[in-house]
Amino acid sequence: MIWKSEHIRSSAKSSSEDLKKCFIQSRNSSPLKTAFAVGIIGGGPKGMYSLEEMLRQYSKHRNLDKLCIYWWNETEHFGSGPNYQVDQGDFLLINYCIGHIDAWDRTDPNGYIHLNFMQWIEKNITVDCEVKPTDYASRALVGHYLQNTLLKIIHSKPLNIDIILIPERVDTIHRSSKMRFQVESKHHKIDIDNVVLTTGHCYQNKALINNNKGDLPERYIPSAYPIKRLDHISPKDNVGIIGWGLTFIDVALALTEGRGGRFDERFNYIPSGKEPTLIPFSRNQLPIMPRGPIYGTNTYKLKYINEKWVESLENSSKDKKIDFIEDIFPMLEKELKYAYYSTLLKTRNENKIVDYIQKLPKDEVFSYQKFLYPVINKNDKIQKSYINYIEKLIKEAEKGELKSPLMAAAAVWREASNIVSKVYAFGGLTGKSQEILDKKLFSAFCRTSYGPPIENMKKIVALMKSGIIKTFWTQAIEWSYDEEGKYFILENETHQEKVNWMVDARIARPDLQGNNNFLFQNLKENKLVQSFVNQGYQPGIAAMNVVGKVIHSENIPMFFYGSNTEGALLDNDSLSRKKNNLAPLWATEVIKQMTSVKNNPHK
Image (cartoon, rainbow, N blue to C red; front, side, top):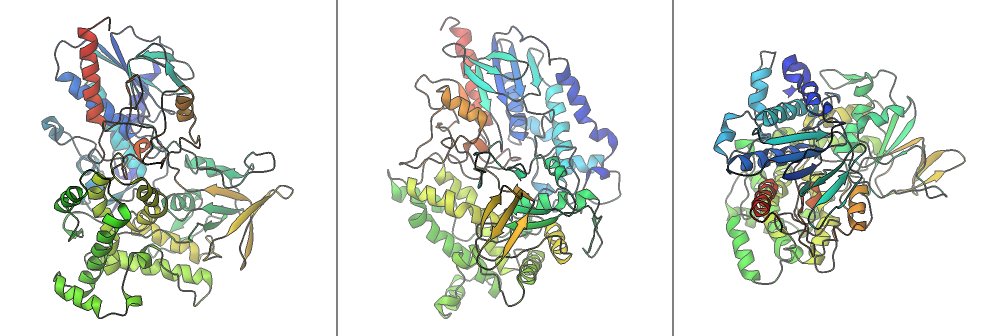
């Protein structure tokens, strides 16, 4: 089952309007005169989790001064952020099961009285259908849940806390005094004592092409989000799409199903006539792998990589850093082969599996190279080859990772990353091996382990069969822009294609050195941040300590949480309150700072 906004009663979908009442009155208000003020920059789930943590920890302390929390977001979609906006089409889905989504901290006893996503759906559905943890949902529906959660958080705040929601982009942050900041947005300049940046996926990919003036061509769309920016694309246009991943799927569905096309029960596509032609490509020309419902007992369990293994790895390394390629990757390879062959042979007996592998010719042994970078069979036309390849992946995903050797192999990185992330954290790997993981392996791991629901890939196949999605290459291509003709040229030695539009469907990572975010560039220019460096390697984030606090010579109270920590932390999840959760650490630091200010008012 895929749960959508249409399945939920209207009263559960009114949160966005209720939230507006929380900030419309404050839009033109003057800053409140309070003893202590904190700022949260970024209105997605991480910002909401930061707010809830702050309220919860504040309520545990008596005799603290009044607190004012200023919360900025570029739009009015507080709680949901851009990824889970409630006004997006229900054809845009989350890529994991609803049983994994919970906006509350379950380590707190009070957290158990609140609803997780699955319970919230059960409470609010209008259809007679069982809600299962292995079901999927639209991103808009997740947004409704998040905004419902935010209203509960705001309504439960202590009386001596003020919360001001400001739906404006933060343009600059600078120091207004030795230990205070001034945050500037369109209509506000507010002094605060502490700030946490939960800015999410706010970065821009480096443009792969410019015109002679150095500007982007008019029809080059550097980011697919918000998805409404694709509305300018006309029917029958040719659209080049950079990337074969999750964002590509969103683009493809927005320009087809989002324009009135539909899929029947057998996943045949019935066009509306408003569709352009879509031409995806990527560096390795490999589509993302789908995955079936993954929850509870239908999840593959690792054999070798566990907490005990991490402990032995750290003990053997002593004071030196761990090399991902030498110390970790061989164990991942061992785990991969075990996952594949134990599932193939239907046995967990290690000796039988080893014997089987040893009898195989070396070039036939399943490996990470073959798994991450498979060769698409080109016995037929390229379009048909891609259709056959994706349909094969769908069949494997439908078997599940307990029956499909390929899907069992795909589970290895997903299950291992939580353990590897502990070694990775804050420069635990050698700089050179971290760079290899970040730049050469991580995207391939994501492509194979964090794929979309099966239904979405069936839709992609249907669009390929209908000729709306077209593929022409299995090898890397080059592209250029014809300024006179106002079109792009995609080509290699086998084929050339002209397209009217280019959509960048890659997810950008932090790049402080490359200035790919306006606010972080401003922070660097104002000397509030410097680059995180691990043995000469700069992953692109600001230097921070283990609680997410900026490393600064004057110990300023600026913190980071979420995707802006990727490079110091591994593989953040925008919805998780468990993985790389720095919000409690930030709230603890705020309480310490408030206590210090109260006890030393002139410090």
